[in-house]
Length: 223
Image 1 (cartoon, one colour):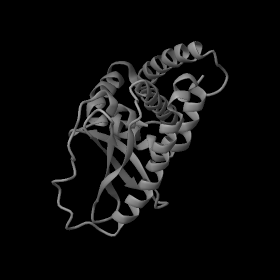
Image 2: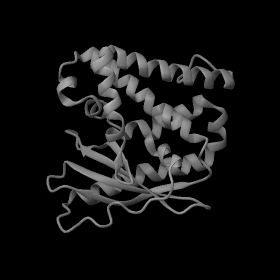
Image 3: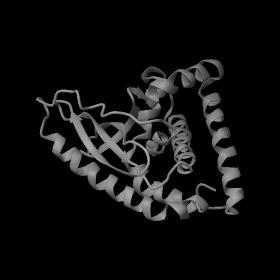
Image 4: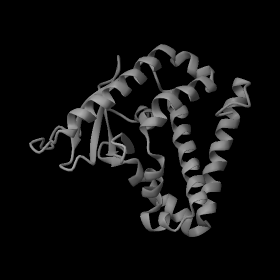
């Protein structure tokens, strides 16, 4: 879902190009193949339906459900944002509620980024996997008719079911978790986890209420 974030920035350079690939394990080919299929399908559908998605939030939300949500491990991102120690202290219901608020926030970013979309296509450019085949990076390249190519890195992990999922995103060496974790943890310290959840939910609710009112739709996600 954070692919949309790159539309807020200038051009970048391949962040993986200078890293050694001598130790690339067999998992690299599997990772590249899996993400190539998913990313290519997402890119093709966005090119085809972007105009519709701008006026139909329900259709765009379904697009995110199909192509973006399955690629993201929101629970792992949430744990990284507030820290492993704090996350381990949460009850399962509270952890699920916080993860849902984070997921809605990422979805909001995708909606906000849609207005910057102008026919760009995106594809897998490179991958890097550790020796154990448990963690890696997928580098995406975004091609624009007018701007230089943009490169965005997805931090991925391989789950117990051998499926690769994204846990963080990096642009020009800066990760989403690295940028946001301090504000998340300060909110937890100042207002508790409930305060963090309330803050996220209020921002998301205000955004989607305004969006859906303008589109005159309700009753179906995200409205």
